[in-house]
Amino acid sequence: MDQPVESPGWAGNPNYVVDFDPVPARVAASFNGETVAESDRARVMFELGHAPFYYLPFDDLRAELFTPTNHHTFCPYKGVASYWSLTVGDRAAENVVWRYENPYPQLPQLEGYVGFYWGRMDRWTEDGETVEGPREIPGRIDTTNQLKALYPELAREWHTTRNPGISPYEFAADSNTEVWWQDAEGREWRARIKDRVLSLTTLRGDGDATPYG
Figure 1: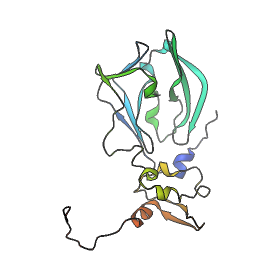
Figure 2: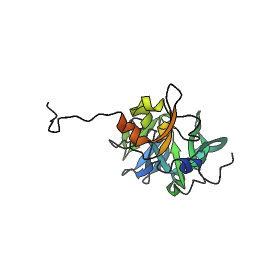
Figure 3: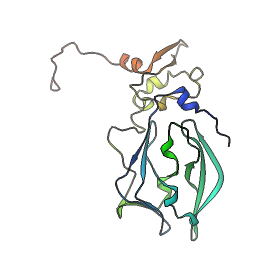
Figure 4: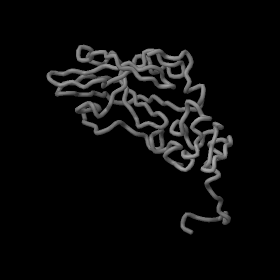
């Protein structure tokens, strides 16, 4: 799969957010009774519109258990991802990890890291203790605080043809990005996302109001 030289995602949405935070624990993933990856350098990705994902250094995988495949996907912000399948004993999982071998300059920290489909592993541990899911930081980027989830009525007015290459899940509600909108009657206009969000709220007239009435 060919990768565009310039990132179409960052070109259309320069305020997109991808955080890549260290996990302060030794993280291990197990499959069919074997530890297949273990690292003190694990990272958790918080990306606008996505649930958190764990990434481990490629060098911390048991390379003999992973086989490259012909499967590739393209992310307009990160680049082309290559995939590996995993085989341990009599069990296999296809395209279970991915790697951006030539990440776009906006995300150089992805170099050398591999992302995991959490649920495809049998067990995850942090410092030897089993954990049931990737770590979340309250209030950080996830699938619940994107524009599409918070304001579905605005997402329905997102102009699908005049906003090429970008979607409402890629933006936070406080974004200053100006995009095209279209209402049910077919009227079209440009406005900042933030202004559209504010227009859906009202101001109370009693300035001394308290949370208790």
